[in-house]
Amino acid sequence: EDKVVQSPLSLVVHEGDTVTLNCSYEVTNFRSLLWYKQEKKAPTFLFMLTSSGIEKKSGRLSSILDKKELFSILNITATQTGDSAIYLCAVPAMETSGSRLTFGEGTQLTVNP
Amino acid sequence: EAQVTQNPRYLITVTGKKLTVTCSQNMNHEYMSWYRQDPGLGLRQIYYSMNVEVTDKGDVPEGYKVSRKEKRNFPLILESPSPNQTSLYFCASSLWGQGSPYNSPLHFGNGTRLTVT
Image 1 (cartoon, rainbow over the protein chains, first blue to last red):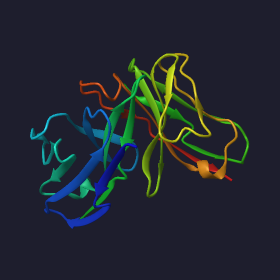
Image 2: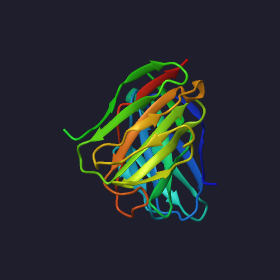
Image 3: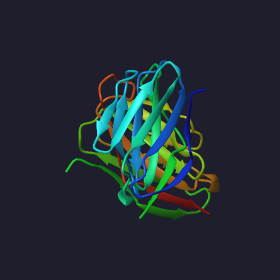
Image 4: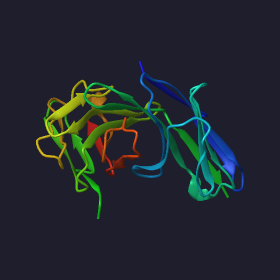
């Protein structure tokens, strides 16, 4: 059974702190790993990672994948209150007719002023 | 504006009364999918569809039906809802299937909060 595990489940920090969110996975036919951010409503896409060791970066957010150890991290530097959200990790598993997508439970990040 | 539209946003119903949650996308996406989100369990996939008339089960399909008669629409049907289907439901679409090597991020609808009493 495919599995995606995120840690920590909850994190409270102060503005300006740097945080690291973790995602480990066990999935057949690995193709990619995806990060999403969910604020009050629907999740929005952050990154797609397919290759080990290549950092993806967007502003203060960055992410990297380790396909040997089967995990990814999402870093947020100089956190702001607007970074408060649930961060979701997901991994697709190829099936015969398409692709199932397994999400982790998510990390609830709270950034206090 | 490119979007995924779900209706209704909120729904309260009683056990056993059939209901349909509609989902429509205007981006000509091939892939559509339904998820439910529950505290402590995260987002779990119910069904997905790679194209018209092609649907497949996700992780939690029991008690749900879907259909994909047109590319833009992917309704979720609960034939006989039960209280354990009380949840927040999201529809999502993407240009390609999620196993594609090409970056094909999911676009989510704003969610439907369903309560079954």
